[in-house]
Amino acid sequence: MLILSFESSCDETAAALVRDGRTVERSLVRSQVEEHRLYGGVVPEIASRRHIEAIAGLYGAVFEGTGYGMEDVEAVAVTYAPGLIGALLVGVNFAKSLSMACGKPLVPVHHLRGHIAANYLAHPKLEPPFLCLVVSGGHSHIVEVLDYTQFRVVGRTRDDAAGEAFDKAARALGFPYPGGVYMDKAAAQGNPKAYAFPHPKLSTPYDFSFSGLKTAVVNLLHNASQKGEELNPYDVAAAFQETVTDILTEKLFGAAEELGYRRIVAAGGVSANSALRRKLEAGCRERGWEFFVPPLALCGDNAAMIGAQGYYEYLAGVRGGLDLNAYATMEI
Ligand code: KG4
Ligand code: ZN
Image 1 (cartoon, rainbow, N blue to C red):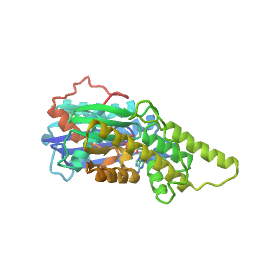
Image 2 (cartoon, rainbow, N blue to C red):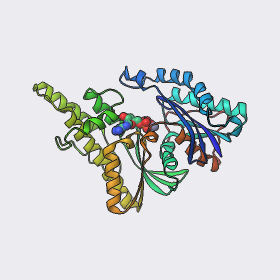
Image 3 (cartoon, helix red, strand yellow):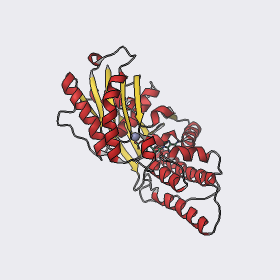
Image 4 (spheres, protein in one colour):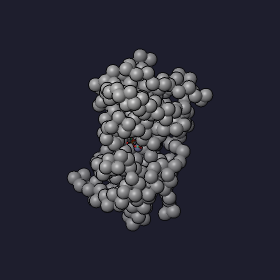
C-alpha cells in the first residue's frame, strides 16, 4: 500500500512516497535552515511562507522517476501536531485539499510518532513493544511504544528539550544555528572531562531538566571572560555533550530496567549525536539488549517517517476529515 506523506512542522518542507510503512520509494526534504541561520533560530513567519512556496513543487517532484502517480496512492498522511502552528497548517491544508480533490483518505500523524517510525524504515524486523528515547529540538521523552499506535510517556523534560539545550549552548559558544551538529563536531576535538557540569536531581526519576545545564555553560563562559581567561570551546562542547548524553543514557537504561524492556530504540534529531549513539549502543551490547536507531538521514525531520507512521495509523482506522486542524502542542 502506497502512502503519500507531507511534513511541515518546523523548518523542513518534506514529501515522500512510502510503501507498507517500511519502504521508502522516494523522500524529498527541502530545508530552510540557511535562511533561519541569519536570525539564530527559526522565524515562524518565514517558515510558513517558505513551506507555502515549496510544498506544491515537492508534491510534483516526489513522483518523478518512480513510475507512480496519484492514482497509485492509497492515502495521504500529514503531520498535524506538534510544531509551529502556521507551518503545520501549510502541510495540513495542502494534504486536505489533495485528499478532497483526489478522493484519497487523509491520515493525520503526530510528529513524534513519526520520529519513532523512522526506525521501521531502517529496521524492517523492528516491532513494538520497545522503550524509545525521543530527543528532538522541541521534545525529550522516554516513551513506552506498546503498539504501533499506542504510547505511554514514562519521562519527559520539565524545561528545555535536549536539542534546544545543545542549540543554546552552541549559541553561547558562537557556533551557527542549529548548533547540535556543530557541538557534536567540536566535541570530537575536546576533552569531555575538562569540566564537570551538574546532573539535576528530580523527584520523578525519568524526567529531564536541561535548562540549568545551559545556564552552567553560559556562567562558565561569562566568568572566564570576566577574568580575561580563554576557554577552549572544544573542551566546553565535549564536557557539555558528555553530560547531556550521560543523563539521557542513564535515565533510559534506568527506565528500561524498571519496566523490563530489553529492546531499546532512539529517535529524533538528537539521536544523530555520535556520543549518544555510541553510549546507547555500548550500554545495550553490555546488557545483551537489542538497540535500534535510524541512519543519520532519517533522524532529522522528513516525510518518509510520517508515511511510515501514517501506514500504521491508517491500519488502525485513523482518518482526518475536512475539519482537520493543526495543533501546536499535543500529547503523543
Ligand atoms: O527532530 P529534529 O530534526 O526537529 C525537531 O522535531 O525538533 O531535531 C532538531 C534538533 C536540533 O536541536 C538540532 O541541533 C539537534 O536536533 N541535532 C543534534 C545533532 N543533530 C541534530 N544535536 C546533537 N548532536 C547532533 N549530531
Ligand atoms: Zn522533528
